Length: 534
Image 1 (tube, one colour):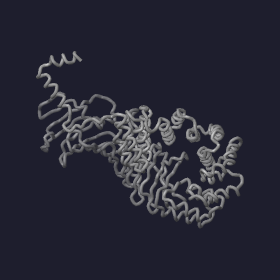
Image 2 (image 1 turned 180 degrees about the horizontal axis):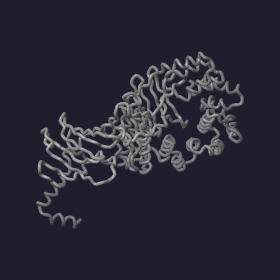
Image 3 (image 1 turned 45 degrees about the vertical axis):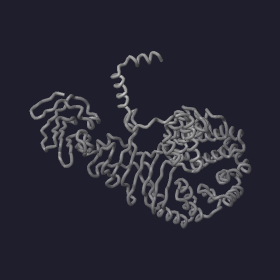
Image 4 (image 1 turned 180 degrees about the vertical axis):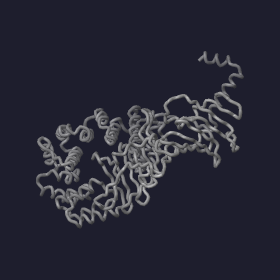
C-alpha cells in the first residue's frame, strides 16, 4: 500500500489530471453500472422465472431468463430454466444444449441439481439423434426408471440389437413402471409396420410385459391399444381396447388397433382421424390401408382434398417429426423440413395458390470453421428459379435456365392433396452453384454508400461490372479471363469517369472470393494524367 501511495505522490498534478480525463473518455456518457452478479441476486431471478413457469407464463419467463443470462456464470439454475423455457417455446435444440452445457460447467445449484440438467440434455440429444452422447450423459446419473427409459429409447434407435437384453433387465428391476413398457410397444410397433415380429427370446419379453398389463393399465390406460397388436387372444385385445375407449378420450394413434379389432367402423375411424387439425402421415397411411369399402376410401379422399391443418411426418420413426406441412382447403400454404431435428428447418417453402413461390434453405458450410447460411430462393415457376439471395447478394439467372427442386410431391391417396417429400437426387445448394448459374450478381457497392454493383457473368466467370448510385453509373470494371483488368470510376459523382484503376494481372487460379473482393488486386490508379503507385 505504501508503495502505491508513494507512486501517486510522485506524479505531477498535470499527469494525474491526464489519467483521470483519459479514464473518463473511455466511459460512455450514458453508461450504466454493471449489475452485481452474485448468487443471491441470481437466485431471485431464478425463483421469479420458476414462478412464471409454474403459472404457465413460458414466454415471459423466457424473455426474463434471456435478460438474466449475465448471471449464468454464478447460477446453474438460470441456465437450466433457460433450457426448459427454450424447449417449451420450440426454440433451437442447439440453444437448449448450449444452456445445459453452461449449467453443468458452472455447477452452482440452488433450486435444481445437475441430474435434472443431465436428464434434459439426454432427452435433447436423443431428439437430435446424438444417441451415443445421450448414453454418456445417462451414465453420469443415478440408475432409476427415468434413466432406464431414456437409455432404452437411445438403444432402440442406435443399437437395436442390445434393446431386448436391456429391456429384460429393466423389466426385472422396475416391474411396476409403465414407461419402459411404452418404449417396448413403441419399438415393436415400428418393427410391426416394417413387417417384422418378435421371435424366440424376444417373444418371452413381450409375453412378460403382456402379463403385467393388469397391474400397469390403471397407471397408463394407453398401454391397452399399444399392446393389442401383440396379443394372441384377439377377444382379450378387443376387450381391452373397448375398455380404453369407454374410459379415456381416445388418441388418434389408437385408431388402427380399434379398426383392426372392429371396435369401430370405417366411417367412425375416418371421422376421428380428421377431428384433429394435426395429422400424422404414418397414421393416415395405416388407417387408409385398413379400409375395405369403396365408400370409406371415397370419404378419406374427400376429407384430404379439403383438409385444413398440418400434416407431419416422422420418416425414421424416432418420435420427432422432420416434416411439417400446412394446408388450407386442401392447398399447401407452407412446409418446413428439419432433417437434423434440431429445431432449425433446413428448408422452408411458402406457396401461393398451391404453387411453390419462395424458399429459405440452409446451405452447407463452405469451410470447417464456417456455419451454414440461409439462402432465399424465389421461383419464376417451380422449379425454374427467378433469383436467389444470400448474405445480401442477389443471384439472377437467365429465365427458366436454372432449376432448383429440393422436393417432390406425393399425391396422398389420389386425393389431389400434395405432400412434399425431400428429393434425394437434388444436390445441396451452394454459393458456387448460385454463382455458376447466375447471369448477373447484384450486391451493395463496396465503395459508394447507398450504391449497388451489378456483375455480369458467363458460366460463373465475371465479364463486366457496373456500379450505380441512383440512376448514375459511377464505375465500370472490365475483366479478362475472370480477373479484373481495369476500372473506370467517377469518384466525384460528376457524370465523368475520369479515374482509371489497373489491376494486378499475376497468373493465379480464379477463386470464388475474387468476385467479392477484387479491389484487393488494384495495382495503381490514374487520376487524369497522374499515376499514383499503391
